[in-house]
Image 1: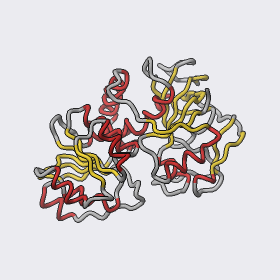
Image 2: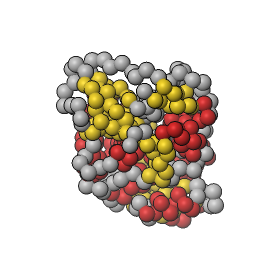
Image 3: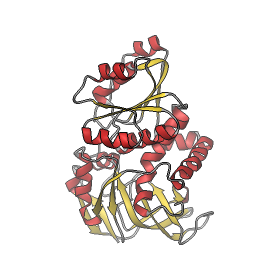
Image 4: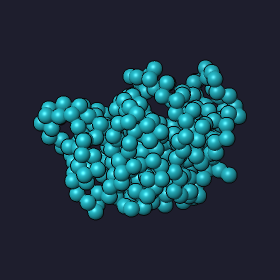
Amino acid sequence: MRAAVCRTHGGPETVRIEEIPAPGIGAGQVRVAVRAAAVNFSDVLVVADRYQASAPTPFVPGSEFAGVVREVAEGVRGIGVGDRVIGTAFVGAFAEQAVVDAAAVTRIPDGVGDRVAAAFGVAHRTAYHVLRSVARLLPGEELVVLGAGGGVGLAAVQIGAALGASVTAVASTPEKLKVAGAYGARNLIGHRSADLRAALREHLPGGADVVVDPVGGALSEPALRSLRWGGRFVTVGYASGVIPRIPLNLVLLKGMQVLGFQFRDFAAHAAEEYRRNEGELLALLAERRVEPHIQAVYAFDDTAAALQHVADGHAIGKVVLEVAG
């Protein structure tokens, strides 16, 4: 099969399309013919060996895909050959075939295309679990989303608005803010052209209830300071490459909660909420109440270019690879 292979950790240019043997399949697993795969910033970090977990070389990058089940191993129930599915994995998505545990795939709702399904998996599920179960966002609350032009950030904007919150989007460029506004953000703040702390105070004089932070770095502390007493700050990742140092006296003085979300741990430790959230989110997708913003589609042969597009910070929403027609 053809696959994008990383043989040496480094920049996106280290990823090349090669012919490699198809992966074997074990009990409880399914083989999926991949039609589309989404490119995430986490994939860039894994290729560079800068992610929280390391992938030993050589490996096939990619964490989310959509396709058709071609083989089902012993012990699999509820998924059959011919089913269209969304799948997630740590690595392995950027290939013509992916083999994953059956629990890692979900049927695609009728009427949802491969590109949309592939782009929906990681970002929207992360944002929904964060808002629904970690932040416990309520209708009418004030939500601040950092990195609102990225995959998780834009998904959080869209889902926060769908859940009835008033959303303030923080992003780096006017183009990203324009898209965030189209997906439901009420307030738009460009952190490169304004002092973030002052801008948040101006837009939210009463303070924010929830901050979602997939960026880290210099944006975290001013966003934390924007919370009202008892507010919730959720750290989701560090796309800036810098893990922030937070003055704990702020947490004490404002009685706030600092929370974290890591996908695999949440699924393992909050299985009941995880299943509930997954069902609710798929219903929103089927009803077209939420849908990923796909900025760019790349041919499979251009996987390295797609990774570079994301690495350079040019992506707004999602970037998708067309693996098979």
